[in-house]
Length: 126
Image 1 (tube, helix red, strand yellow):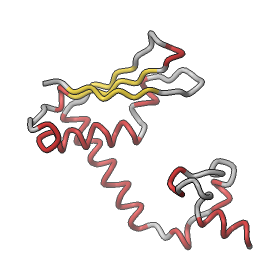
Image 2: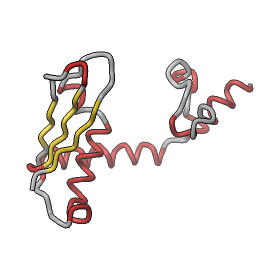
Image 3: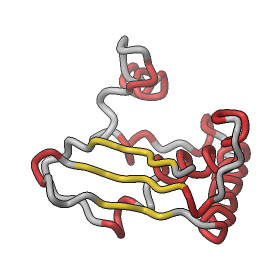
């Protein structure tokens, strides 16, 4: 069995392999599939049978494919664990600098469409 993860991208610029392979979305999707294929598909899928494809409608012929492997899986596991450790140890009340993100973070999907994050709201009140 071979598994393809397809991601339809709508960005207005052409993406390339060196960019998409670093995206957390690709790292997490392939890692989770590699870790949980038995639970998801009732089959243990070898890492080499997993790939992720990025497609942009405006660049139809440019399908970017990331082929997975055990080496990539172990590297992704390390990246995910390091990020979790950094987040667990980050003091958002003390260390978060709202000014660094003010221009990029006007809306947040994770705020359920109501407003930007609480940190942004508090910074604008003060």
